[in-house]
Length: 118
Image (cartoon, rainbow, N blue to C red; front, top):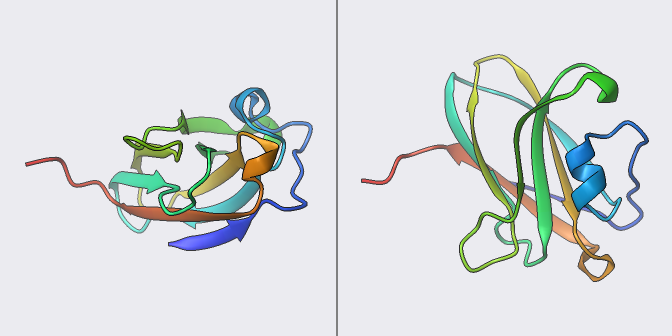
């Protein structure tokens, strides 16, 4: 788990279309390297705000490829959740934006290995 803040954040010209279309232009980014091959869950649970979330691979904004994108996905919440297959040692770029101006502020980003329901 980590936190960030979208206050004062902006959107770059070449950010993925998902972020441009669904976000408020207040995206913040993290780099994450998969510790092992397998499925992982990323979410914004604990943020308490309407978020959007994207996970990408690539080397520049222009060539980012979406691994997973979500506007919401957490039951009974406006927070976002994605599940995707990661490859050990691969660097991923994770972006969080907020949907509305009133949602600007602190955000929480969580990640764990995916455990299928029993």
